[in-house]
Image (tube, rainbow, N blue to C red; front, side):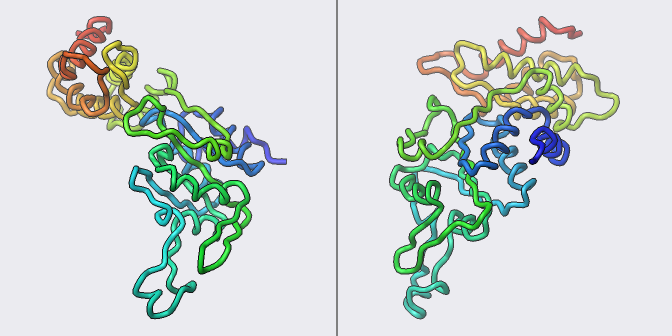
Length: 290
């Protein structure tokens, strides 16, 4: 029997993942019993990173599709190339396999990014593949998934703009794993790992950057706060600034880094720049900043 805790540690070490032990453990268990996994979490919490790490650990080929309202069944399954179909007929040579079909044929991992942006008609094309592990391709053949085939999908919370509701039939074929923001301590470690710190840089920049994005998630005016990416960008810009002790430099860097990463509540009259400025100054006033 596989030691799940040991496997989690191997994945963390091999792919340099900080934390997320519990979430990785759940995905490994789900895969071991042949379940499809739906990971829900806000933008930037590491859904894709974890999915790719688990797939790579099990030596699975990784097939990805990024969903939108324009994702159609043929984008998933595949299609007959018209010129080839005319010249060679409806056979294997004229058919272009989509990522779902490729994953089934090779026993790989099908990764569906932001599945709740996929139209319902496209959702329906997944049902037999996820449940019975078969896929009927009209005029060609029936695909039976090779051993090892598994599916990991991600979705943003329903409150996000542009998402649709997953059909009950599709939801029923997934087990659900939630990815929340990580602890402040883990986020600080991630910032220090991903931003371009050198040996002389202290912890102060990483800590302040983390506190700023955490504050953005708790501010009433903001519907969606910044992900860890905002703190990494902020730290990188401050590290390149002429004066990392200047509140003006921090405000400027924070507006640059967070402006596209936060979403305001409807009806808010203040600008993003004003709100970000208030957040930064509030954090700097509380920090040992001089």
